[in-house]
Length: 152
Image (cartoon, one colour):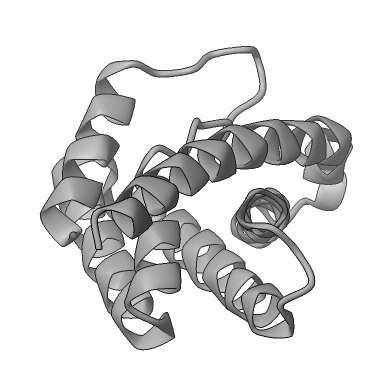
């Protein structure tokens, strides 16, 4: 699962999304994290996510990428695990919330690193992008989870 998440991270690295706001990504590796959360549990999903973030930072983005990735990854996975545990939301909505929380965590890191809270002006765009990418990733994860369920 970690290797698969790393492959998705690499693909995302090769195809950057540039719409004028730094930090917007598709989050392809989160397909694997969501599947792991639903099929394997929080401990495995957390481990896969941490290892993937660490290796991705070493390969593609460096120390700053590690800080952004860890903050966003830990916060979003924690939020998704809590929502999953409530069992009130679909996989897609859990992913949407994860995407939003991930972007909020990264915005917090940016504000702290830059010692400038003016980055808050990016919040509306990051909330929308987190929701949209979260919905896409959640939809793909749901399809994969249904396919895995049918194989039993």
